[in-house]
Image 1: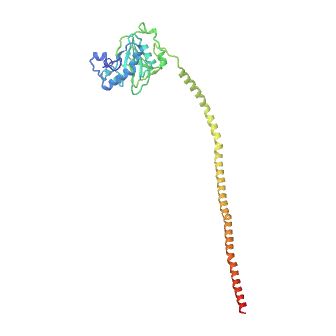
Image 2: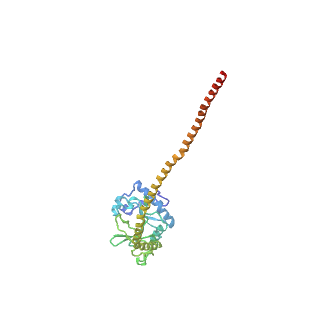
Image 3: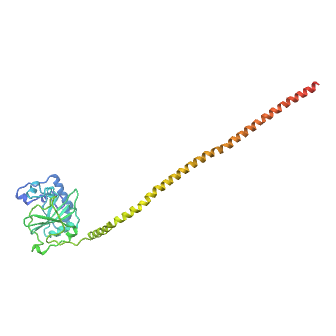
Length: 310
């Protein structure tokens, strides 16, 4: 069954230990899906970039096999999310660097060294990848220690002659627990034999300078704060006084407007009343004149009648 362009399910679940001890190492459907994602997202692009075949020493490890190898309880091999790989004819360190140069979506990538044997452990987590780079070194008793390094340090690594004549070669792979458990302590830096430290990156140097600049203003901060407090006391007292004056001025102005309007009303209404009285007087005047003239006509009539009777 093909999982991707270059990898099959059979090679991703193969285990020398499982074959030798007849351990069933078939993954569940979700394990197959995780293996498919690992192959398509990480292993296929790496295989295409290096131009040579990649050998999967150990991929999926079922619960029985993982327990037999004393793997971590939450091992990514157990989920089908990790594989131990090498590329025949290509130095393992070169394979390790190429995966980092390509900026592949790995959760963890570990350069592992156990005696003359070396390999790359790489994992992919669809839920989110940490992009963690580690170095693993096994001691004579088989105990492994891990140190975290940056991408710059990893790309500056070189193999030293002190590893022996077979420094760039690779011994036979032995399937072991080769990833730190969740609670394992991982040291910082590349303080392992055969690994040279890279010079500090420009970003880290800039970060140190910015930290130094930020540290200086902290001492002067209390003085500035005190100055601000001292300056803030004077305006705080004056501000309420100004507001009070404005309120009082507003209170004085509002009554003057009301009194002026009430007084002005009678003055304007007075001409109307006077005019009404004058009109009434004018209208009444003709009646009085008529009343006076009417008797005069009657009296004249009486005088004329008297004259005729005579």
